Length: 412
Image 1 (tube, rainbow, N blue to C red):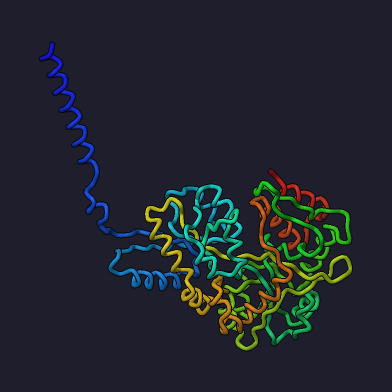
Image 2 (cartoon, rainbow, N blue to C red; image 1 turned 30 degrees about the vertical axis):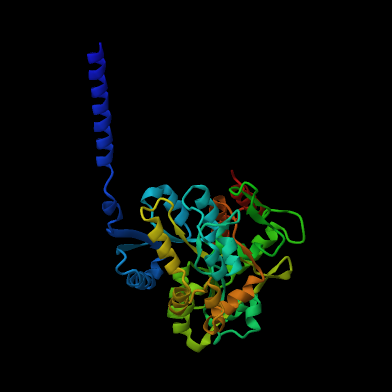
């Protein structure tokens, strides 16, 4: 009996010994864990930012030369729908990505972004409005990049005086007389908000943070939804107006057919090169609605840099994000792309303060609202505005169209 127990004890000890050895062999030695391999990072950004970003990547690799070897790949991705693409496959998404601030809540809620640790330095270095835009529930989830995601009026001083640009109707009259165009993109609900924003008609997020409320179809008040629609039809009917996308607007500026248009700071450098000393920039004009002038409104916001919570190299991805938004690189971004910095020191520099586009954006900010709308907002507004841009060819009831718009925007 004792012999049997002893044999069983030996077998048990041997099994424990083998199991322990096997466990130790499965773990790589410390030097293998710490061995620096190639850090592979994918970055998403606007297509027109590629040249700038490649320069920033090169300086980042020089800064950390000797600490790691890097392979940084740029892929063009629109900042406006970055969220949708990223959440389609987080694990295969970019490590670092640029996006519009209205997407930060959804990205954080879906687990695409983690709160930034030790964020105090970033908070202190950034404009307070951009910190607010990059935060959810008081926690910073993204890195502020620009403070200029809004729109205003570009105009050619050879055709308009400072008095002329106060009125959209006057601008359209002068453009028609000159056989030229004033443009705006009615295919984008982002710009269409300009007609509704200062009328008392409202749109925004419900408390659930996902669905919208919308009163653009209201039949009561000093200005009704139909009043705005009729004003838009009058604008569309002018031979001096055309609804154009941003690339079409820039093509018109280049060939001389466009002499004014609504756009943002991203086109400042190119327009300056084309119009030279005749380039003007100002707040949006007023337009006639319900028989009186109404100052056109705008959405405002900023661009942010996010770090994918599923990145294989989260620490290096965070370092790259911080490098992209550094004061030096935000100054470089302004010089190359004309984009307004989120960094306090860069934004307060004499060069930035002297920019006509930035001055126009600041003037328009008095009439702007931080963009906070859910995903159901965009398509119904675009469909409505494009039909008006075409002149409402079927003669459909404006109230019925507004009712359909409001229902679509507020859909759950």
